[in-house]
Amino acid sequence: MLFIGFGFWIVRRNDLHKVACTVALSSVYKMPKRRRESSVDEEGASSKEAALAAALFGSGGEPTFRVQSDDESDSEHHTHQRRSEEKESAQSDDEGEEQEQDSLFVVDTSKDEAAAAELCSDDEGESSSDDEEEIKSDKKGDAMQPVWEDEDDLNIDIDMTAVNRMRKLRKTEDEKVLTGKEYAERLREFHNNLRGETALKWARIDQSDNLDASDEAKTSKSLVKSGALPGEGLPAGKLRVTRRKDANQKAPSKAVVQSIDWHRGGQVMLTAGMDKKLRAFRIDGDVNSCSRSIHFPDLPISQARFIGADHSQVVCAGRRRFFYVADVESGKVKRIPQLLGRKDKSLESFEVSEDGSLIGFMCNDGHVALVSQKTKRMVSSVKMNGSVRCCAFFGDTYGSAPRGLYTAGGDGVVYTWDLRNMNRCLHRHKDEGSLGATALACTYDGRTYAVGSSSGVVNVYDAKAAAEAYRPAPEKAIMNLTTAIDRLTFNHDGQILSLLSRREKGALRLYHVGAKKIFANWPTARTPLSYASCASFSPQSGYFSIGNDKGRVLLYRLDHFIGA
Image (cartoon, rainbow, N blue to C red; front, side, top):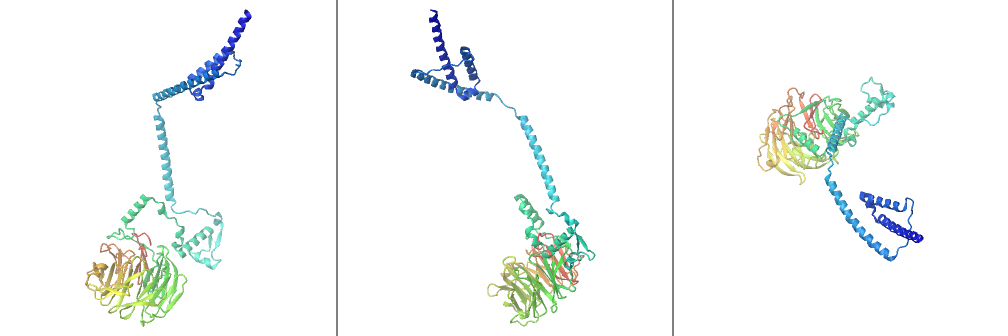
């Protein structure tokens, strides 16, 4: 009986053992990993099951497994499916509870935001201060500094008298030795004076590329307001003029300066006069070095002008039946004996078109001989009644090929010629109140022209209005001078007209075309004009040069214009 009871107890124990193992393993194996890691209740349940298993089998007991039957596996599958559904519903409930718990808590970040804002403001302050320091440093360093300097240059001494060609770098005859740094500066200065600023234009940094749209708008507005832009905002009452050193201070003329002309680049100016010399100067306003001087033994020069598309040649004429053409760069001179088909004894008066392709010589019997710049031969001519004393070319745009010609003579009649249509005369009219025209000038497009007379009166006409009337009235009659007008010159954009007379001391005036007024503030009684003989504007009207009877060429800077 005791044996039977002990056997029953062993069988019962094995069954309980199997059931407990099956339940524990199924609960552990079927439980999702996410559930085990995130839910605290499930971890507690698994710990309870582990404690129950340890109580039943001991801490070191290992359960035994047997193969289940088909009925047991089916029942277990249904049980697993039902438990998985219950777990999914419990998981959704837990997520809802977590959302509710999150909505119950609010994290206070006001202090952190304030600290972050304070930190950002500190950073902005530091960056703004850094920017200000950079701006200051940029302002201090506007002048470009060399990237690298050779320290050995300071220890080198160069004898300036050892080689003859190095003597031109000396400023005084007493200089004999220069350091390497001084020698490099002298070479750089000599190169700039020889080649001009245009030679180094490619190496300059254009600061306008660094301006944004607002800066460009402000800059343009300020320039227009100050009258610095061509054609805009030139004040009528007062002209801002700055005196610079004489243009020909390095080589003044020994006679009256008869002619002044500017190179298209605005850096070179030529002078000519009765001393039979043609001189070219590099104009910078301070040094104004003389780069070329050519002597013509048999020609006292009455007029000299640049010709050619690149202004590489100069035509010189005087009271002779021949004229010269000189190459400024090479210094070669070519003599043109006379104009074929003409027997004029003097070719001293002529004008050149804006593009330099045509030369108009004023000849006898009212003829104007048109000479080609390339062949130096007469290609056509125009003839007016009476004698011709002055003429002026005009084109479509500034520097373009000529399309027309104005001429005037001793009878006071002004002619307009069409050079593109067989040199046909388009219109002619009598200059109002004129006893004889002595000077004539027009803007580059021919819309406005001025005629000076022997009585000192200058009449300014609008070309369109004058062409529609038989006896047109001038827009303005300038009566500030009382002697015969010798020279009339418009600046490049037609805003200023200069008029001068050689017969009276200080007889030079500047006229504002738009306001129809003479500039009252300049020239003054103290301006050292003496007897002005010729005057010329630079290509961009930045400079105004005046030649006089003392052989000087006075140079003035017109501050209303940017370029030279």
